[in-house]
Amino acid sequence: MSLPGLRAGTGLTILSWLLRLAFLGSPPLVGWIADQTSLRVGLTLVPVFGVLVIVLAGVMAKRVVRTQEPASA
Image (tube, rainbow, N blue to C red; front, side, top):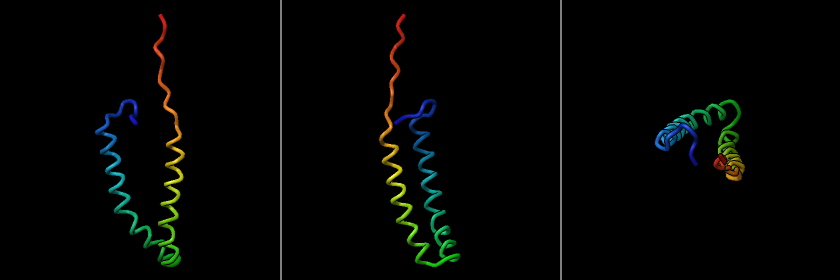
């Protein structure tokens, strides 16, 4: 899927950086949640959020891309 005004390489770079940030930010977030509540709650949230991502990805996959028809002269 492409976005208007955004090259494929640029989109891939942005996605790559977002994944790196999530990779580096997730463990401290889980640790903070575990400190505030318990380790069981902190580690239970990881698969819960994973399932949430899968469900939301299904919603995004159902989008229909409409093409513009050429204008008649």
